[in-house]
Image 1 (cartoon, rainbow, N blue to C red):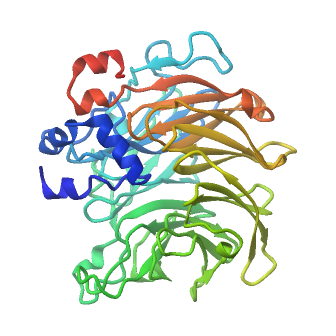
Image 2 (cartoon, helix red, strand yellow):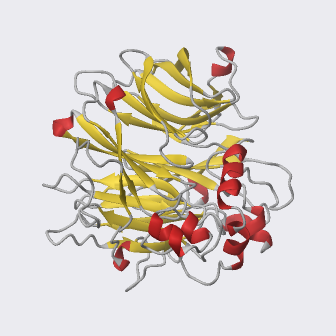
Length: 464
């Protein structure tokens, strides 16, 4: 087994407990995967492989759109990870169930029918993508990777035409027939060989797009000089979504400790923190000293993970860890810096990983919460101030989420990426006013156990 593969083994999106779950699930397949990492260039396009990030793009005039999936290639079986566009109208086996259908669910759909031209090579260990609408109607995707070079991949996709052609491609420095986006990506650690080794952002974890800006966070502090284990500093990296350029000025210092993710807010950027970092900090966009939000004074919490702004811009939703909590913070933007006060804390199922906001017309938000350690999808109702509706048995290690609105906005179809078993769970909520009536309606893809253990029977049966 290569030292690199061994060193990356427990760098999962969740936590160490999640890593142990993976090891139990995959067993001896880990060693085999690392030994075979050079055999194929990227994961096969007829399956997902450690999906780490999802995005959904609507298709004009159709109920089913396009699902974008980043495959993290977590065990380094392949030379690259992949970024694929799944046409949900082209799925095999009769396709997805009609929205609201109750018979024969959950349906297992293993024929993804992804076109070769809609699969791009990216680095392994991809993080959370950001999505930016292009002026001509397409989409631009920003995908960070924690693999070699700490790359930020930029991919463009045209709006699908009448024949379903998507034209997914690497951006920035496109070449004819170029499908390897590692060749066109930006390195967040390009300064590693300079005298100071700074600025750089090792292990980038999330790309957040807001009002034409891209903010990149990273999970490991940068030392100076590089590899000295001294003088640690961390950054929030700021780029233009239209014309992304990576200069030293793009790196905004945020202190010693790195951040999981960001939330742009007026003239500020909110940053979560792990380990010894404050759970929530505020960075002035124009530069300057980072301010601790001091939410720990209201609640004993070890870390902050994902965070969202409510549709009415009056509240912040934050995932807390150690203990696992859903936090609601009252926001007062007219203060300098903005005031954040914890007004509600609710215990969550184990290892919460991701938040997803669903707006409701004339009502407060419904917030979907994905918990990796307990295979759970929960909902928080902003109006009621409680968790309402929960679904378990989504699959192994759910981590990422995307959604599509249905029935004139009254309902939604959710896609939850299972990092550990490699499938995507499809969940219908017919009426967002009654999220307790959610249903698991389908699984997309094959269980990746068949790929890791190279057991064709498992592939055919869909895994255990």
